[in-house]
Length: 301
Image (cartoon, rainbow, N blue to C red; front, side, top):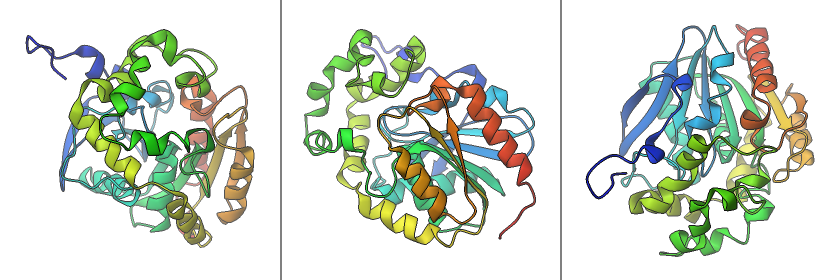
């Protein structure tokens, strides 16, 4: 995070002011940053691998009337290493609940994208007391954890020393925008500052790469399939808000989630790929806000 002269590298730590100030949550085994802004019912946002809380920077300011919490999960683009957590998929999912409880929140609307959506499914399958409703945008589910386009890359990235070599091209903004990188997840290029904050931490900090490798060692469809089976008895409102043009996660998974989770509502987000918070933040915020308001006080089915 620091340069040779000791100055903090702004590109690694930049977070949009729209997210609100960061709170450092001292959890078991490490520290997690949470950006909190606003008042009212709580919405907690969980991003996926190789992005961070900045993913939600265009959605958060469109949800006035809510307490909005954007977590900085240890998924490769974070700034607080967590060397004392195993960061398996179940452990990363537990971090969500630990953060919610540390913030003293209840009746939470939990929103997940990409890898974060898988973690939200795993967390929701336990039906914790703090969870009020679930929103899944395009994300890993069922047999697709990790998704097909990455399935053969993950075993390579697990090897020590491979990440900075295999992903060295991510230092170049031009290469990041190609379909082999962030370009597959968005219709338009990501803002420069946000994109730097996504791509550079894992390339520039060994301890961040170590966190990421631990996550990669223990992902797999056994976790999402088990979560889906338990979600057949989910007793809280759920919304599936899936990107219509997704290149990573198939439409069939959205439809399957909507039939697996009792009473789940399925909405398509047009003109959007995996990162709907980047491509269509207004539409996504409209869906989340309307769903949270419409189901307020719904309780358990």
